[in-house]
Image (cartoon, rainbow, N blue to C red):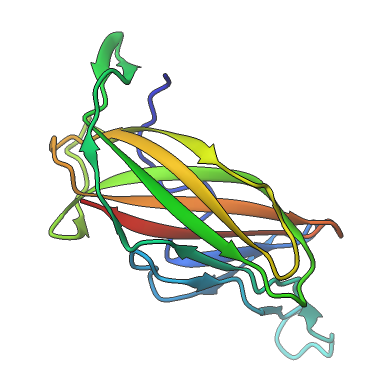
Length: 200
């Protein structure tokens, strides 16, 4: 199985939600940091077009009120055996494995969404705080989707279940697992959001 060095999900900061339209780039909406299990809503944002003093009317940014929530604020990690990865030509085993459920809920008056991509990242923690690895070291992790329905219909709820294996530089169990998801709407608009849980 491939190895993954921990990194912040590309283009998605777990402290913000990113809303993007097919044309015109993206707009960031600052939110308080999503502590494990916190519900995040991709809510309404408005991008102001033109420079200060311009008479150009504000351009609405496409939005969705999809709610992203973790089924549990914490998940239990169990010792893993037999699941390996390659690092510097050496075969190593992941030390821990856990399963997390991300629940996606779409209001009845919202257009349907399709899950187009997801990224999972693992960061080691001590006493609930992220601790950066020493120079030259990195978290190693691998994730697989166990159950997943990609289509979220109006008024619907979808649970995405992930299995995650990981090995931390401090050889500990405690970690923050962040999940970033991307969504597409039938009208071509794109959205993304992220949430995190604590593995203990």
